[in-house]
Image 1 (tube, rainbow, N blue to C red):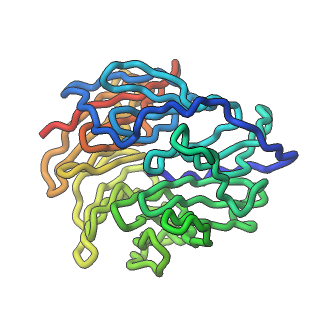
Image 2 (image 1 turned 60 degrees about the vertical axis):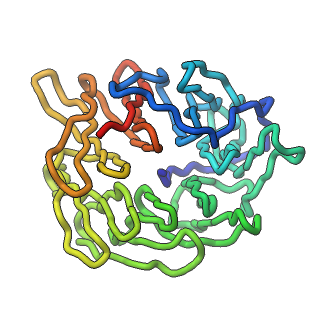
Image 3 (image 1 turned 90 degrees about the vertical axis):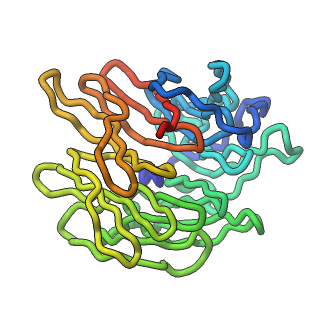
Length: 339
């Protein structure tokens, strides 16, 4: 899951409503294998995915949220509004930021849990700072996490929050995350403003581990966490060459792969997936690779198009999903996890 740190100034915030019948399919259904070859699932220039979502994927083209049935290939709009911003999935509910509705100055002003047709009290606004800038939406089975700030500067009045699904309460949850956050069943894994790698529980409590890094170098990029094993990329200043690292909490770093400008990655039970730039005679492109978690040969899992960029890699029990953008547009792709 990503923790996005984009902010915008809030002026003239006005609450708006969402037009939907709440008819999205169950997000708890079994996943649907896509087959061993890469499949182009959805063409969309701007997209945010929320998977796994049963046998579907949820995506946004910038405003509406749609649901694609992976078995039939049919897509339908499930949330329709110019007020929807970044969104995610929590259990069988859709969680999203509500904006002020101004297309020229769109600002995230509140956080909504939408229970759909399964609840008479459908919309639940949970933010303690309505009207503030909202960013960094992250959902896990143990909570919903976000931050608010009154100005464009994230260091000015930045507050971080956690909604507890057991009590329904919202409490401060300070992380100071400066990169994307990766999760497993119980932990959060990220780099902070001092370039330290941090592992901490998803429930309130102190960090369980902090790795010091070289302050003058770019922050390490978290790829994934699985219990006591961490996967991340470090960058060499000057040439944008990344090294993909695996380490246990009490062991030395070990190199799994090297690549140019790694931007995203994910884990399944056996492999680490990561993106990296590739230079050839046709021009620069972004490819998707994978390498065994225990080490071994690096496999090209998907070759991007000329002048392409791949962002966000997500894995469920059946498939790997990714987004590729080119000069002409973008699309969401998927492929069944294969041995």
